[in-house]
Image (cartoon, rainbow, N blue to C red; front, side, top):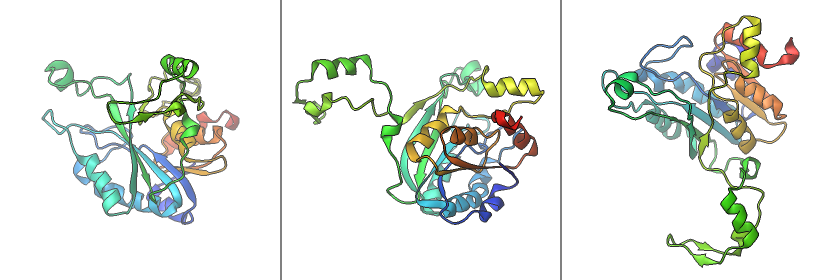
Length: 279
């Protein structure tokens, strides 16, 4: 974990040395947050130097997973397009490929903004954030066998009882291969992970140390999914906006090497609480 501006610190990393960059930078929200966030109009230009370095340090088959949330325009119940402009810049100007659009569904997310959702009742609750899976080449390293999910009860019955080969109305031809047990289901690009870790080990350790928890953490299960999907043991994982270093702790637990950069010294100090061995 290193303290400083990651746009500058990444310049010290060798070219094509990182297998996966996974991060959640400050979003361009209307209201200022204590962890720092950038105005929507300036966001694309602000992010460009970070993205340039991420592209440079990625291995040819490496991936860049960017978790970013949307926001509303000031004074109206309409959505900003800042994050889509960012995606277009990353692909059209810097040469990233959009490997897949993934979405983090957080069922515990609060209904905001209150004026449009709770008071005037003009909008519904926004419970998803983008997780754009970007890559340096059209064929990044990935293996969905590493993130299989449990079969549903219906699928287990089909495997046990058999399935009559036929064509579906969609035109798909279902053959006998459909009933082979592959060890689990291929997950969708909608990743359901709650972010209400009020009783997590990190929270308990912060309380015991008298430290304030980082105010904008993503759940460990989110980087865990992409680390498993896109890397092998021993690979190097980078988080240029590490915060309390959820990514680093997850990478270490999965046998990957990791590097985290964070601009705020209090968060670097706080990140030690994710590693009991540092006590």
